View 1 (cartoon, rainbow, N blue to C red):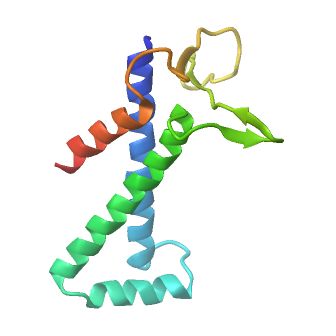
View 2: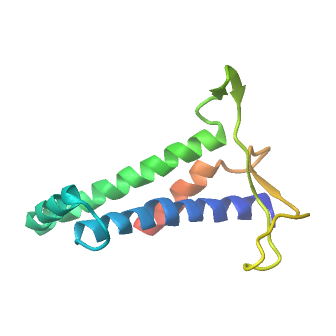
Length: 138
């Protein structure tokens, strides 16, 4: 597996997990499914009372907030926002992808790891994510 394929797979996972599943969970709570509290019940009632066009706009805004939140994490992973500091020292994040022999056997061992971040070359992770989000949403 090369770096570009690994980066795209990571960005797709970030979209599915961070945006799609996050919005799905919010939707379930607003519909009264799951173990949501009183505030979720009230929010669900309020959401259902909105005209259809307003509900569509709310869904759009929630999706954009989720996309921006995931993008912010990826920008930091890419190092595009500068260094983070730990114990007063600058650090950069590292993300890799290591194929496993089988899905049932994801035990760490000797594996070839593809480094996604930091990237010596290729497209930044947050840019790949933006392309995926744009494709899905258009």
